[in-house]
Length: 260
Image (cartoon, rainbow, N blue to C red; front, side, top):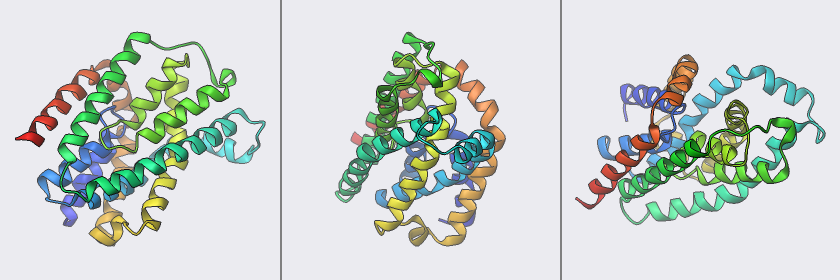
């Protein structure tokens, strides 16, 4: 991967993070199909580039993040939600991470896996559209809703499963307001992304080692810049376009490509 390719991948992450089409899935398909990257390395880089959009979330919701840090206590509802959802994310996501690493050892299954999971994402989005938003706000959240959101985020480590789309859909299905679900989805991603990057680094599969420090830093930087600049616009677009249909069709194409 050269510098130009790293920049393009960063831009791709910055744009697709806000759309319910799985940014990690799109990155892995690009890396494996167009750049000839090994699936394990592609998975590692996809995780690492999420640092760029994580920084964009921190800047965007800096007041909420700061208030949470300043009022860090079990009595604070947002703090409690982040702690519970993060613990559940780890319980679900860590085993899935190691399962994926073991699967990628046995040849290139990226197209088939991502395709199937994109179809899953599309079906989830379709169901959430039918159900619609609920009326529960942050103060009305119980441990069940927190755990469901965390489990959805843990599953979303799978490339092809949209993290934002799946967590928002899960929260909508439990009766949470759409604007509340969207904000919580992005804030809860902060510890989850940091944890995933730390896990990948300590597991000895760091993207930095495989692609070079300069390329990875540039990818993260451009993911941050484009992620921050496009966040508001793309979130509005995401509410107006049928991405459930897009995910299902694109997933079917990826599955077909796997068998051809």
